[in-house]
Length: 114
Length: 253
Image (tube, rainbow over all chains, first blue to last red; front, side, top):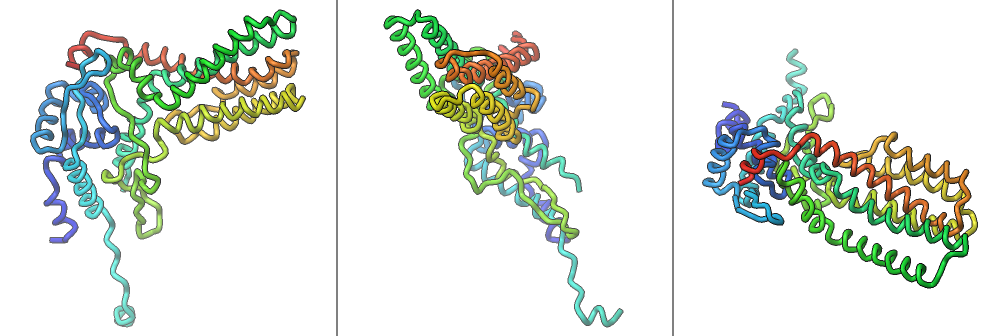
């Protein structure tokens, strides 16, 4: 198998799921975001977002904490260094896999054979 | 290969930065800090012209005026904290909380550029360096607020040099162009139409005989009013789009 294609099979499947990838992308863009912001940005249902966040939290990719902004309680999520590194590794793998392979250079001998 | 993914990722960072301006509160806050001393300055100019200026109202003017300078510096240093106080009551219960990205490192880029064999520049996703440069909330202070501040200082120099009338008119046109140009690639950009009232106010000011002191404060009042209107318009649109609902309260907890 082509090495580039082989790399695709080794992708982090936890991040590869579109909804979880979206959550991680949103959290990468913002320093931290609360449950409502994630729900609105990703157009998730409450249950869907909860379940994906739990999986990411279990893997140590996302940290969830209860905070207060003024008098409002907020469920704030942010990417952990582990999650950040996993996302970087995932993106690098995708970039390598999508990068067009350089076409083999024509050697003088090959040109002569034509 | 299409680059939809690149657009998506790019927008994730930009949206988080732009979210800070969704309710117009930053513009309203800075606008009021410029507008109120501007109004006071114009009133003082009129009072001085009509010889109704007394030691009492001059002292009061200086106290309020310097108070607003202090408020301005507090807002410059702690704008996130100050605005967070208002946003926690208005914005976060409606559309959620997102902390804007921190100051970006200059060498970071939101996109990785790859070169296709035919040398066409292709924007390809990168998640690893998605922190958006140049799209930070601090750009608003650097590009909008400090541009106004520079104009206020130049206005004072022009009036003291005796070329206030035409000088201020030209200054306001330059100010409008500067605000448009400096912000055109920012998350909070302004259209040419939206900055045109600044230039128009400058041109119209030539037709009105302002007292000497009031001329200095003309950019303050126009700049402040313009920011308040921009922010107010954003706030009205935001409140219409996201009326506070009970479901959002439940979701939050």
